[in-house]
Figure 1: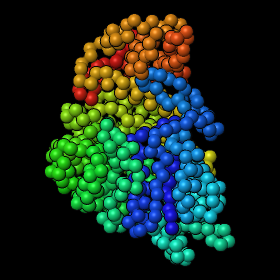
Figure 2 (figure 1 turned 90 degrees about the vertical axis):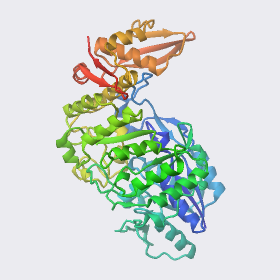
Figure 3 (figure 1 turned 180 degrees about the vertical axis):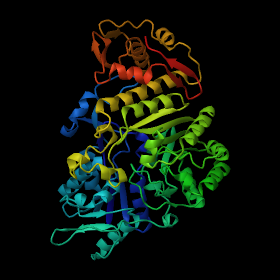
Figure 4 (figure 1 turned 30 degrees about the vertical axis):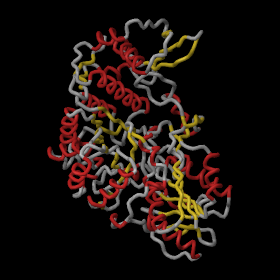
Amino acid sequence: MKILIINPPINDFFFTPQRAFPLGTLSLATVLDYSGISVKVLNCLEDYTKQSLAFPKRLLYLKRYYQPNRSAFSLFSHYYCFGKDVNEISETICREQPDMVGISANFTAYLDNTFAIAKLVKKIDSKISVVVGGRAATADAKFVLGQPEIDFVIKGEAEQSFLKLCQAQEKGKLGYIPGLCYKRNDGKPRISRQSAMIKDLNALPILNRRLIDYTKYVFQGSISTSLLASRGCSMGCRFCAIRETFRFRTAKHVMLEIEDAFSLGIRHFNFEDDTINLNPEFRPLLDMIIQRFSGRIKISFMNGLLASGIDRIMREKLIQAGLTHIDLAIASSQERLRKKLHRNDPTAKVFGLARFMGKKQIVPTIHYIVGFPGQAFEDGLRDIRLLAAKPALLGPSIFYPVKESALFSELTNLFSNSEDDYALFRSSAACFDQDISRDRIFSLIYFARIINFIKQLTVSTVIPDLRKFLRKQTQGYLIKEGQLQSKLKLDRNSLGKICLRMLLDESIIYRVEQSKKNGDCIYSFKPEEFVLNKDIRKALHELTVCGVGGGKMKIKFS
């Protein structure tokens, strides 16, 4: 039996290349390969390619916010398909001639990409069995299985169940398999009540990165990979769907994987489990990394790291182990809202860890949520004004509904179980605007980006007069009737300084459109109409901004 596992393209306004590693699909493929089954992996995101698409009808309201903008603190501008095109995918399917195709569906907003792959498979050969798994498929297995091109859905962690399904298909006899959903002979769905879960993570073989072109994944000049030291979570945050029992791998088991990856030339390791420091094996793992590699590798935690349990000794160990940067999260700075969200990681520990890392020249980012139920605009302002004064970058994420989360149950009257509404369940859609208007949600995002731009200007330097600094930096750039003409192409940083200078002078946020005239670059400065002047002043006037390295400045408007 030949198996092809596909990580589909995604349609959205943005994509983070560092998150392209096919961790889940590779884990499935590794288990099959380890068991002697012929398997190939097609990660449609590995080349970081994109094709521009028209705005979907369901998202046309976003055109008010997503317009062309060359400034350093711009929002998004275009809707794209990120990943391989249909011809490349078709060629792979035809070349491999699989008996079964597994397709990943981890995010509800991207189910249409999964369904498109399923249709393509059946168009090429209707005899190929199509299996879909992942968190989105687990959350609504009946809806996914209802697509005529999909034969099976596996709920939960699919490694062992997918292997059993492949073995059953070879034998021609389908018995009980945990988490397996399928269509009966009468066409009606049989939905498993149980979700598959791997109790002993150490029983899984270490990822076989030789099944993919691992050299395509690069971060800061080094071949990079992602890995997990644990699964599940015991935190209980109400906005999150992860409810599985927390389980962890031993430090020795993780080190076997790191050693194998190191032998392939991989030098950057990103741990995807944001609760890794709840793992009692985390400290021994860091000790092993320090002892074995001694500065020869880099590590990161791009999905976040809990500040709880990171004492001074652990902080030093993280740096010795090769930490490149650190991502932390508070959800909100307001304790009453944090209690509502069941976010229990103390903000004081987050800020203390960020301050320590900043002094060590490790850039911290503090992530928080904008626009969640019960949050007012004033709460959002408090978040950015508080975080502006911390030695860390701001990492705002717009709230979106997550199926299976506790918070989603409060929103079911606003959204139907349809593919149209599922397309809204992404941060870039800003679909929930019951407590903060959408205009103000995007204003808060804009303010955060402006603050981050200023933080990068100051870093460790005290700038006593920001307006004077900007005028000196942008002298020679003459704007006449809202346009700047230049023989040279200006970079985003230069345009950002000009926009920031205009913001301080006029209390208006401008976006920048670029065109050509007689060989010159023409930059048109257009006001962002959805951002209110009074909100700009509330957010930024008399605001103290602290750079990552401890530099400070105060924003003052004319």
